[in-house]
Image 1 (cartoon, rainbow, N blue to C red):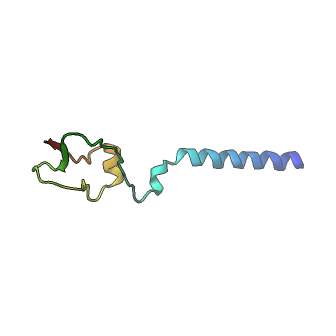
Image 2: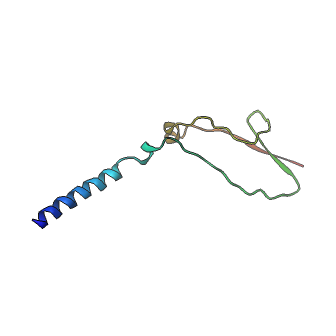
Image 3: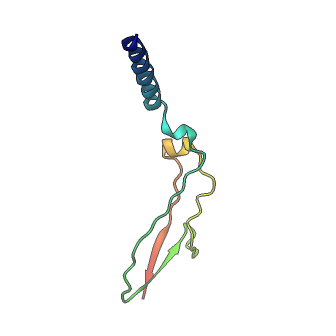
Length: 85
């Protein structure tokens, strides 16, 4: 009797574990964040962050980003670092 219960218990746990690995993990994600941290060494010039229109910005604004855009890698925002004396 103990062997039969153990067999069913192991079978159930294997099925449960397999189902956890087969479900994509991004299904339960309703938001995602990105933080970029960098170190800029102070030198003989100054650097400013600018958008495509050469306007100074302090934040690269991505707006709303959806999971499908992350998977397809279609959400792209370009920016430039402008260096001057």
